[in-house]
Length: 82
Image (cartoon, rainbow, N blue to C red; front, side, top):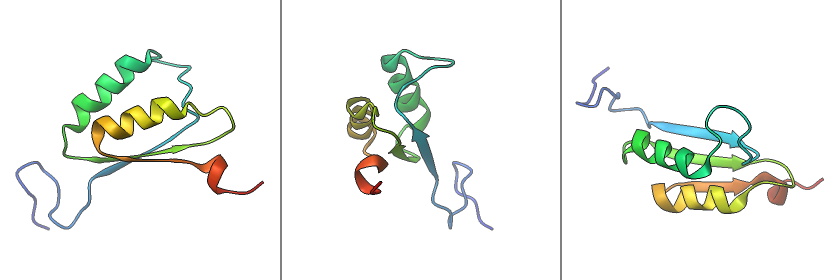
């Protein structure tokens, strides 16, 4: 398997899938700091997909991350019927 200069395989698609209710309760809980940490780690090299679960998903927070990192977000409570 060939590797590119960033250490990723040329046939791999680097991504992170974030499953969340959008309500941080442990570790870093400041939304601005979380967004900053994500921007710093991704640096345009990794795709981030956010999946929000539950009725109280912080959609604005997930949307901000999507807009800042050119990623996609989905609120599963709006997609999956109950």
